[in-house]
Image 1 (cartoon, rainbow, N blue to C red):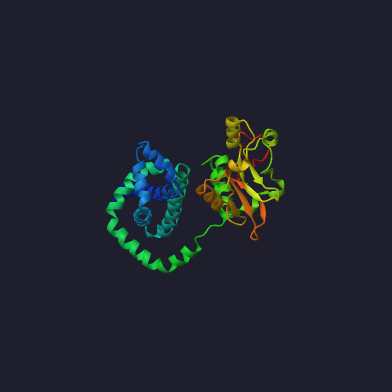
Image 2 (tube, rainbow, N blue to C red):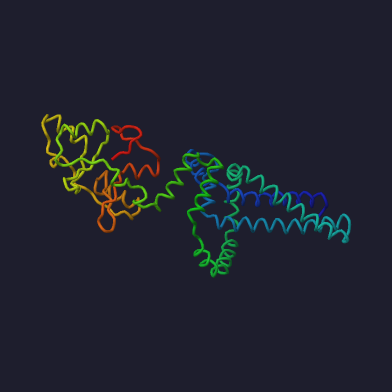
Length: 335
């Protein structure tokens, strides 16, 4: 092979090596959700990227095969060029120099570049990779089969170790937020959601001795005065012995009062009480309250003692922050 032809082939192989290295890192780091969004908007190349990601193990095999072929060819060609130009004594120097060149321009530089613009790189390179996946498919299947067989004993160990703690998930969320993949508020919401499933009702209930109640034998005028001074939308009702009788829905009470304009017997307008245990998870209580169509739950200890109340708003506030009822006065807890 003449020297100019060898040198041209050398640079072509170096470009191939850079392509395989860059494509690997671009596809490994690309955001699949962003690519799916691009695909829905008809962005050119996005469908190819999704096809590659759907068969990423096969794509990775092809990239490694291609990279190895290119690297070995470069090493072999460098020996040929060096021998032709300077004789056999230059082989060791040529090999060392080629190793450095391949590392810099076939690995390090293209990977760094591809990581900095992974989406653009992936969109441009995925089409060619799909073609190469078809060309190398037989060889890729053979190598993948050997690899899967050899790694089978280790997969069970790896599967057992694939667990994330809440702290690790929080770190992931913080890293995503710092990289501007979503805003700070969304990051906080995700972190609250992670903590939400671990919280129990006991942690957020309003203690019973802080709960505003009305007695079942109260006069309508007295109750109207309580409503005016508190602004609550629901008030627990107890009898003269302190036993819970139900929940007074203020709108229902006022509607009845406006229709009748006379003293109202509370027993006729209150809702039956809903009770729940203090140590159940918040998400379980939310599901129970939703199924029973209740906005307020009375929370009991294991011995039946009433500890306090929890409203749907209380539960949701653990996720989204303070919520004000349209009839609630700012700064007051909603009973």
